[in-house]
Length: 361
Image (cartoon, rainbow, N blue to C red; front, top):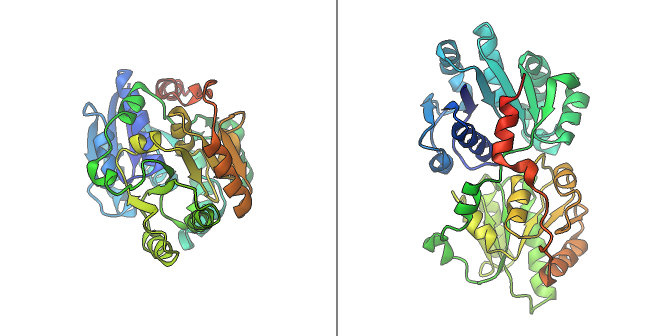
């Protein structure tokens, strides 16, 4: 089967990583896969299998790729074009309509109509209108969680039979192999403590990192014997503000903002605990990655956490803004967490997820 996958770039992000994992799995199953990007920049490029052809539209901005994507669709021999997240979905659907529905567009939806979309300003205000206008012309919409499916029905009036729930691709033999790689010595030198808490995600408003940094400052002040540092992996528009906050609190020797890391798994695997304070998550890969590597998860409540972590013993979910309970959660999980009974993560297996995409009618 010939399959194309379209997203904006190889820049670090949960959606991009999920689509790369899916592409690799489809290729292993014998599919001829092309990975189409507006620009081939980004540190995740090295994670894509060398068996997969990269189609670089060579456009600095996603919106500038419209005409080139249209021409690609007209000439493409693919049977299916998988797209994501929201704006690549919209662009691909419109291009395909202009090309007389040449391809089956499988639009993957990775977010809710909530605080994250609203934080995008004018772009966020226009997104719901474009979703309602265009998504109905896709062949199928893949919601990455049950909550996202319900949100698509409720917020955008999309028919339920148009939507299937398929979780993001995470777990594979390659995942475990990559988790055992050595940590880059340059990064290792920046982590002064042999033991640490880890947070992973874009450095943007929706991830609520100031809350985490303030909690950590309070924690090491109230518990001077607490020996664990805080390691933050990610990049984004809030990076400089977060560095200023760390310096203002005089905790720069204990908080390490390491930026975007192409392979965060070895750092996650050696953490004592994953901490997460996002306002909004649809299907957070980092929860699954941590649990698969025997690292417990402490998070503030969000729809993704409630669904992904349902029935998982090695986690604590606390209310948004509750510093005291978050600190108690850190101390409780640091004290010990039993992984003798493994969490069931089979629904995130990359091979099974790839087969689910191939089974779409």
